[in-house]
Length: 370
Image (cartoon, rainbow, N blue to C red):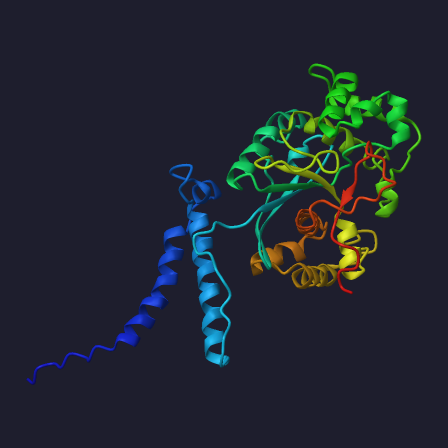
């Protein structure tokens, strides 16, 4: 029998083989880990597994872009890239609820922002394990601080409930001076007045609405064409519970406060305004009354957001958003984009005639498609 000839070593073939297997090896190492495992750091100055994976992704995208420029341009200009930089700031949106068991309804979307791109990284319900309103209120400040720690202090949180009331209502309640100091101070006084020690949120919200009386819009509601007013039948529980919850949050609240390094920023946003401004869509929820499905509309809005905001997302996330007939997941993404846009603009653009006590609804720039 003739001796077997060993194959000639081909460096390029071995390199390609290593590259093919490397991706599967990384996936195998991370497979089955939950979010806490992915975000855990062995020390304060060490990277988490999630940051390492994001770093590898960013490096690969940069090298691919550089190779394409070298291959197709005679005098390529390779963009600068800081390989040691961590991912950019993060924005989280909370779709709020004021009903009993609110934690089962509150939905969060997280977008990680970097120069020239944003990525949807997570859609989840952060308070579903203890959904009672008292539990949510007790845990909110700690949850916010933990999210800010993971974001290294670069965190903006958008919420879809009113952070204040119409100036007329504030005067009626005798809380105008407190509202001038921001939502946290206003929330503490609403707690003391309508909730008390161990009070019931449903009864407290009812007393709150009865005392303010007739619904009145804020200037921000008029500017943003918001039809659900802070003290209206649909929103008053959400408004009351939300402001009371912020009473103990360690955050800054533009336009009342300027952003402070290391502290999370909480702003008021509205998903419906983003949909109107970006692609002229007013209705994206399925209508149970006539059986109309608007999944194609939701898909169109998601495509428009991907183009206008340079938002990246996984196909599984897109399917989850499009298939949600209630539109909750889409609204979470729209509002996270609004908070990110407000951050990018420095939380500017508040009209001069908006009373400081009423606050402002932050959003994307009007008509970004122009």
